[in-house]
Image (cartoon, rainbow, N blue to C red; front, side, top):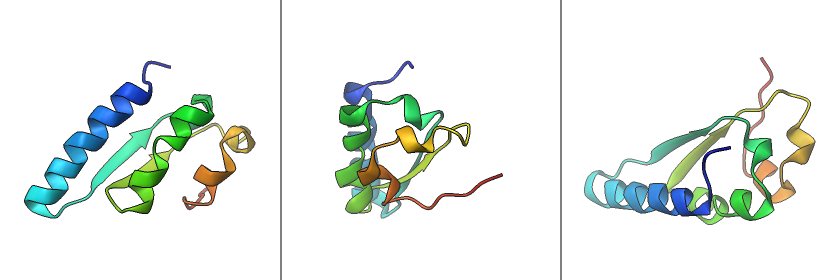
Length: 80
């Protein structure tokens, strides 16, 4: 994993600026989201809930149970 809460905060700040200027939301793709710990996953929540971010997370299908429940209830799950 190469990202942490600090990088999430940076992306959120940029997303909020973009949303203020253009009204557009930011799509954030996180590969292997299950590798983020609880604190890192929880950092997304307020911004998904307030509409700043559209969060797309991927995992190998076997690991969704490792995601924090609070994150899972805010997303739609699709299997490919």
